[in-house]
Length: 319
Ligand code: SF4
Image (tube, rainbow, N blue to C red):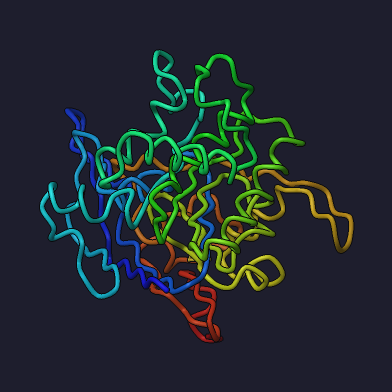
């Protein structure tokens, strides 16, 4: 059972118009559980996923913090060690938009065998057989090996991308918006597939999404990101039934609920801040209905409630 520990991770992008603090001091740990990271677009979710893969594109870089896998700080590995020992082997990623993740000029078989060629000893017939098995595992026929991406539906392409992410049996799979652009039926199929693979293969899934309802049944722990910070984290059931941070409460009020009282859906007023110059104090304060004087000047620390924690001054006395 792999143990992932992320401590005070900061990823900044150095642009000609200023420094974008995309991920700003994120910490969490995960052992044998699945994690859902939710938040609005631009909150830093995808950047966090790319940081775990050590794939931050220029002009960005990880400026501080650590990512430990079973006690080893993998950020200290050089690119060669990361590529051969960590990326795809221990942590893999289902990238956003399966349509763009596949190369249109290569067959599915060629693309599935590529990680085997670079990261394992398997070649030739053995690699082909492994790729066929990977396709079957995600519910596709081995005849897909000869097909090109344009011959597949969106759901089939998403399954191929999932097969690629799993082919080297990583311990952690990051799924970045794996159901975006799919219709609701296919969305449900993909979620059920991920659930089954998680159970059968014993992998930990880190699911990144803007839609809290997508992760409600898939993950054990939910983290909420706002403006580059992890503002709340805790067991999924507690986050859904008893959210502490006002931003989490607003996010939940913006998605329909199957259970409980029927309530009117809300939108969150205002827009997320510019991460080149985020507001001082609590970054959510310009949009928060409970804002107080302290919120505008002082960054709230985590206040802990058993195994759930939230960065909000409302809990200074109660926590
Ligand atoms: Fe709202 Fe203040 Fe809590 Fe921020 S710290 S979420 S502004 S109450």
